[in-house]
Length: 159
Image (cartoon, rainbow, N blue to C red; front, side):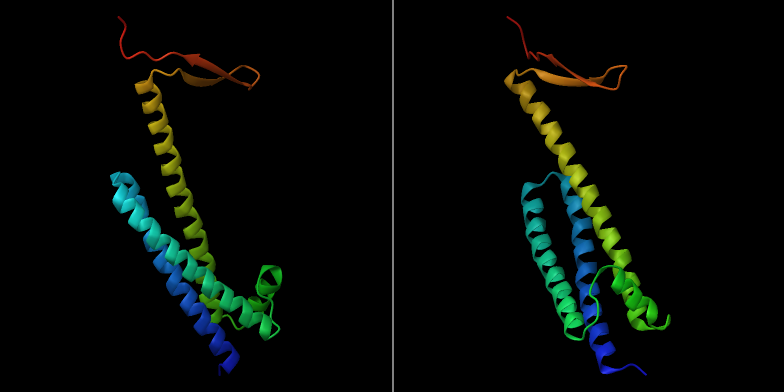
């Protein structure tokens, strides 16, 4: 039999999971938008992502406050021990594991999206440097593993 406290915690975890799943969907949508190179679409998805992140943070904060109020740990090793002390078939255990897995997926997708953004910025910078006739810098590694930067001028045309 589940008690009222466990039921409230389960409801908080369910809400946090729902918002986290929505955030993951938005991150996947963002990845597709970054590949499409549509600034308007990227901006719209960025706003959605910000709203979703705020919702996830809000539910995380509610869960943390609830656990603090009932004298339970809300993070770290204490939380792991708290979850481990519950029966393995407990809905809370399942929800907690799903939330941990989802957090890893969110982090991974966010890192992928960040990589796409960095690569896009690098390509834009190189293109602008070429168009403006600036020297590009090529970085290479020497035998000792030290980096060496070498500037090479980029000319579109010579007279």
